[in-house]
Image (cartoon, rainbow, N blue to C red; front, top):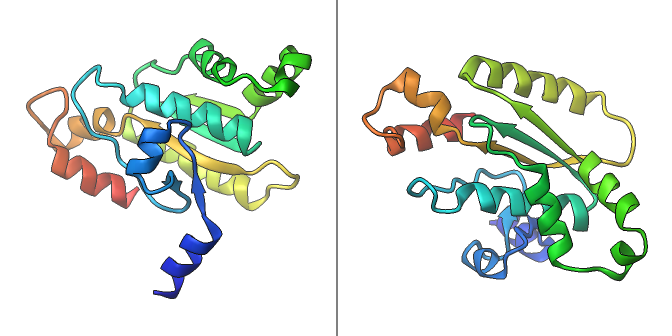
Length: 171
């Protein structure tokens, strides 16, 4: 109970950049917790991930690691999201600010679960030895189902969602 009160008081949340989604998530993405987005193909899950990526990199000035399993990461879309909410500082030094924000985002293409485990292990090693001000605040896996479905089996493009959710919590 004490941890919950601490989290609520200290607002250990990261805004997705969308007020409606943040409201549904009671403030945003909780740091240290898994948040799984589930929906039909083309329902906007990747767009939410890209929006959250741009928001954390810009507003929190922290790092984001984006594990892309389907070649869906779009640097241009991230830039579009950043430009969507004009900031006087960005208007004055657009290119320099955009470059700093984009440098906070590290995207890895991963096409199987074993590569993902390797990337996560390397990330852990890097974080343990990390020095400097920029820290990774957000880890996105877009999409975990495409990695675990070949192992667990599954009929559709979404695979067995209950198994994917369980495996996602394990990761």
